[in-house]
Image 1 (cartoon, rainbow, N blue to C red):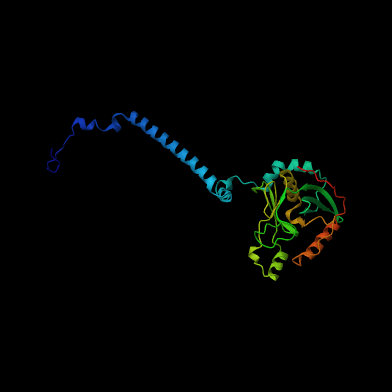
Image 2 (cartoon, rainbow, N blue to C red):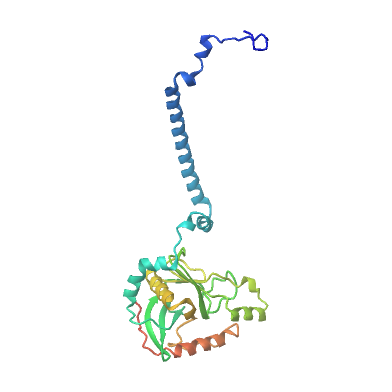
Length: 283
């Protein structure tokens, strides 16, 4: 064969036997089925390895790391807001509280020795009413203030509520504004490291406690509901070593500045004149 330019072109045709060795065009169905089987087998391997990896992570990686990773990834799409939480239990919590009028301000009183917690509402005319009371299920430490990170102490004094936590790992939580300005000033005076006073002190639902206060899940629903409706900015928590209505504040205490805090707590308690129930229902 010659090209239009007069050059000779050689064309070689492969034998028929060679052509029949190319399987893709000859019997495509067979190899497509084989490919599907390979894909299914690979899927099984992937699923099995994924399950094994998940079990390994659960067994080895600390829960706090897993939760942190979840919150950064999938958890960002499934997190609750305060209102979405209230939409689930708010009506039931309000019915249990049976509070006709919301107070202007809310005080949460926590007594460490007695392991009890009380809700007090402040109404017009400086009138305080006892709204509810609950047993404290867990609170680490002993009488005395929190002085440093890791001492397992629950703080003592009058604290603001910093925020509501609808996604707490203990169901629901109120974050206590610790350390306060008074805590920082006391630490500076005693040359303690103000960066290591501790943090993330919570009033939360059922669970363990390391420097926090734990109540039942029903109790935290009611406290969470009232705090949300009254306003975080109008809510305080007053934490006592024991109930000063039954015995006076301790006098021989260290550090010295805690005595002044006890006097302030006692003055606040004297404003609340309602009769206190002797027994708190146990759950």
